[in-house]
Length: 276
Image (cartoon, rainbow, N blue to C red):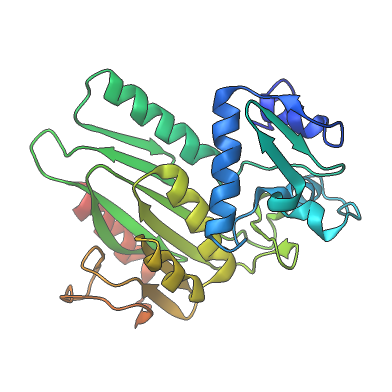
């Protein structure tokens, strides 16, 4: 974590520019996941925007650094048991940390012989182990900018939902690694993946890139939803059941589902139906 000064990632950030430092196996695995997922998403997910994220949290101007410092592929060097950050670089785990933690919990539950569990980190990162005790799958509500838009079922899968921050909440902003600016408000993305780590990185990438990233997510075998003020787009398949509309046999990439009003009353009713 970077939230505690004694955290191992915070320590690595503090030693940026000092050459290689030893890192534990858990951090090494997390850093490898950051590198791999940044490459997989075409750089739309990139923890090296850390200096920008910190500046937004502290309401100050970002430091003037080279463009490569904001790219994890060039800012981080990773060898066996050691890592090195370029001078001025800082990694922010906000777009992957909860997913890593959820996956660690799932591994612990599996080792303990647990066959059925639902791990929920504030609804933004979820993992379903097996099915419900009664044999039915775990059903999850999916949201857009203004409320519930549909449902999906999970069984031995993970789900992550990311959303862009409102203008009055710069501390919670998702930063576009290409422009180094906060993503416009009103975007929400959900990804279903084999692991919460993958789901969280990809939901962040979708918020950054928007609808065009759905095809890339589908090409990597992921189920994904993107929503903004213009409507909803989903990847192909029967995984998504829209609320208030007949469930089609198949939803193709970029199929638009109209926003429906009033969101607040319908969302309250739908949540009650999904989780009686």
